Amino acid sequence: MKDTEISDKIRSLRQRRGWTQEELAARAGLSREVIAKIERGGTARMATYHALARALGVRTLMFVSPQDPEPVADPHRDTALAQIRAVINPPVSVDGGLLFPAVEDAEPNLDVLAGAADALAGHYARGTYNELASLLPAVVQSAHQHVQALDGEEKVRAHRVRADILVSAGQYLIQVREHDLALMALRDALTDALTADDPVFAAAVVPVQSWALLRQARFDEVEKLCERTADKVEPTKLSKATPDELGAWGHLLLWASAAAARNNRPEEAEDYLRAAAAAAARLGREAEVTGRRPFGPLTVAMKEVENTLIAGRPDRALQLAEQLPRDVGLTYSLAVHRHRIDVAKSQVLLGDAEAATATLAELRSAVPGWLRHQQAAREVAEDILAARTRMPSAEQRDLADFLGVPA
Image 1 (cartoon, rainbow, N blue to C red):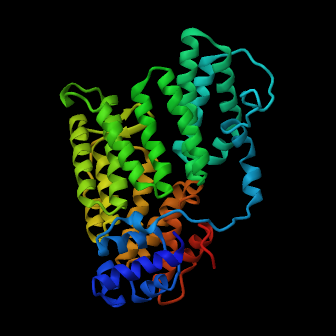
Image 2: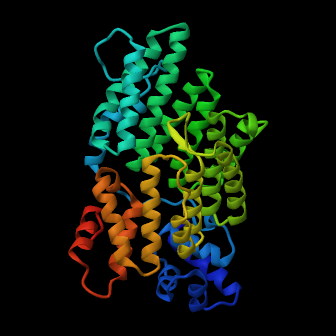
Image 3: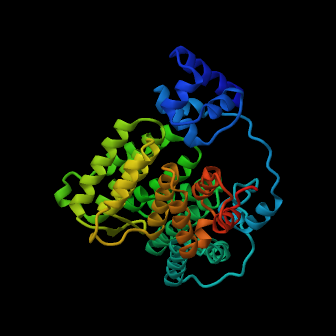
């Protein structure tokens, strides 16, 4: 859908309801100038389209349809990722064989490969992406060699370790916004997990895949994918389910909830979240589950904050953020950092640009390598600058420069 078609659709929906631009703006929590800009064919953030969908009572996807994207010239980025592309998406020869980069043969050692998988996951969890990116091509290539060289039970284990490695690759590629390449890595990770006869790990790959799909605004697909997978792995009895089973099921429900929330389906989002909360309550505290992602009451509570913010209630989101469960163990550190961006967004929406600045500054100090890749943080910085009636402070200008906000 071209921008002009989006503008026509919004104008038609508004007029069908008998609303002026001012009335739609008031119902959506936007300014009349934003409505006028969109109806003239201007572009807007996904959050703005979601607010309009919520006010008009339609799905967000009504405003997200195929179109020819604007050309983007970034040869440096392609060069920087060339080695990673070569091992994730190698060329195919006419005999169907994959052409991987030439490397010296080494004796297979699954323990060493598993250690490399742990190293990649550690770099991802700490947000040390330069180190992860430098290791990734060689480790993925080594995983391919192990699968090709081994037989029997060792080959099965090699598939399982490669699945773990490819998940780290997919997560990193999502962070740097290479979503199609990430989906290739995650598709192969899922295939490896099934080949290794590890359905719980396979189910744990689906939420990561869903994250990439959400970044592409594929809300319906994510909800259906997670709902159907959750139905397949739902424990027969929660009381007898293992932490891994509860975690796999619970994460699927959380991503189904995230998709429904973004697609203006708040009742469905709440239903999924309520089911995930039941799984978390059974665990009682955060637990390290298959896929290296903790699951528990804190993880679910942070997702509720996110959904509430998406629903246009930043005041309630901040209240929930202040009421997060304590003494239930630690969850994934990057999930906590992402939650803090939601807090910053809520703060700036409520007119407290200084608090939002302080929240982003804390994140910059803790995880600078991770923060610079976060589009949500960049949007908060833009909102901070836009909210100021006076000259932005030196700290606010510095944050905007760090996050790449255009001058």
